[in-house]
Structures are given as structure tokens and as C-alpha cells.
Amino acid sequence: MLLSHELWAQIPIPADELKPQKKAPALENTVTMYTRAIRDTKGNRRIDESFVGDFRVLNWLKLQAGIRFGEEPQHLDAYYHYKLELSSKFFYNRIRGIVRISDNVINYFPSAYRKTNELVIAEFRQPFSRALQIRVAFGYLFSWRSPTPEALPVNTGMNVNYPVFRISMMYTTKTKTSYELVYGSYDVFNPYDYKQPFMQASVEQELSKRTAIFSYFRYQYDLDVFRPLNYFLCFGVERSLDKK
Figure 1: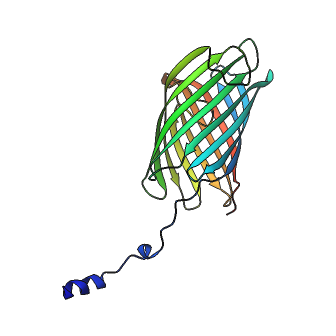
Figure 2: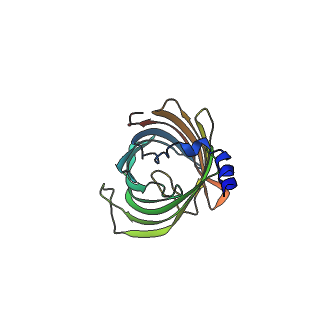
């Protein structure tokens, strides 16, 4: 027994175990602004601007609210979208839940309409190191479309329901530059038909503890990856509202 106690006393304790355990970081309050240029395969072009705020409701719950305005060459108020979304923190650092309602309002005739989308999503993440992580998300969309371009959500009219998904891989360098590859059928505002998903490459650079800039290029296709549908180019800035 004396020998075993002496041997145990000689085993060095890692320095990390001597330090008090840190609490999980709190959900941040942020505001994001970005603009996108979109072109389809018929040569049609449009531009939109998005404003999105993330607000901590509880230590484990976040509210995201956003609005988007879109312009086309012949229609300066062609469309607008808005959304409200609740998302939890990552429980066990692995899984979180997301619920979202968004409304798409197309103003110009003869194709004016509004579409309400309700999403329920489960997202999983797997960190492989401090620099690399993969996220996989699956969910389901409940969507209603009405021929009246009004602002309030609608739950009557043509109804289409289908699954959505998103897979991403992110790598962050020591210089606070993040690179991400995404393949999926939903993003910040609009869910797409799962038969018309997109592939995206993005980069984000942290300029300070409270400010980052980002950009992405997105390619959306129809059924076949070699049948292009839309091209997107985005530039934006994210600003933390918390003191750091």
C-alpha cells in the first residue's frame, strides 16, 4: 500500500486539470448585413439586401429575426422576405434544434404571390479539432402559397411539404480566417426544393473581436448537377453587440 501511494504521488497531474473548468460560452448578440447578386441561366439578374439580428433570449435559446429586400432591373421593389427563428444552444456540444417561420412576398404582376414557410430542423456537429468541424442538419418544411402578395403569413392555399437538409465543413486558421463548404437545400431565409439544392464556398475573416467580413459563391442546380439554375455572389459584415 505504501508503495502504491508513493507511485501515485509521482504521477504528474496535467496542468489543464488543475485549472477551473470554463463554462460553455454564452450565445452572442449579433447583427449581420449582406448583399447578394443573383443571375439565372436565362440571363435574368437581381440584387437583394439582407439584415439579420441574433438575440440571446435565455442562456440556451436564441432568437433570429431578419428582413430582405430585392430589386430587379424593371422592378425596384420586386420582393421582400422576413423571418423569425428560434434555435437552442448545442446540447452536449453536439446537437441543437431550430424552428423557423418565414414569408416570401413577390410584388410584381402577373406573378405576384406570397409564400409562408415553416421549418423544423435538427442539427448535429462533430468537431475534429479546434480548426475543423462538420455539421449535418435534417428537417421538414411546411409551405403554403397564396396569389395575394400580403405581408402576413398564410396557412391556406396551395400546400407543399417536403424534407430539407444541409451538410457543411468548416476550417478555421490561426489568423481567424474561416473557410466553409456547404451542400444543402436551405439557408438563412429561403428553403429550396430538395431537388434544387445548392453548393457553396464561403470565406470569413475576423477583423476584430467584434467585427468580421464574409463572402460566398453559391451554385444552385435543377435535378442534375450539370443543369444550372442560379448563381449567387454575396458580400457582408457581421458585428457583435456584446462587450468583449
